[in-house]
Length: 142
Image: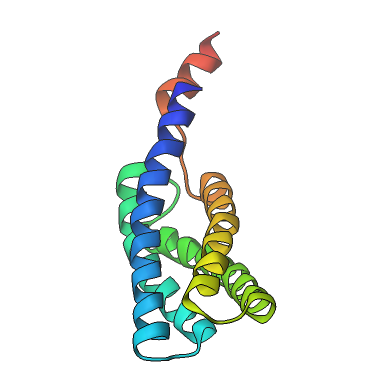
């Protein structure tokens, strides 16, 4: 259980950094360059995914020996594209309901981020993480 808590905390740190990148690009594009917030959210999300892959696979999840790095990246991207779809749906619904002011885009983005964060952790844990080999070994010997 301690390992899972550590993993969730590391995931949280990586997630906060990815969010700051995502949010910064979103605000730059939507508020400074007056880009549509939904389009800006797609671009900012993609930028943050690149950072998230590198940081997540280095610091949060354990590489599975049965996956090549290329296949691992493809799975990560597919899971992220699903996350992007969830993000875009949340951004579309939120800005349609609340409006496109900086405050309402921020509120919508925080909600979208929370929903996508749950998806990302659960899906990556299931399909990308090898788990803790030491813990699995001790469980099988008990």
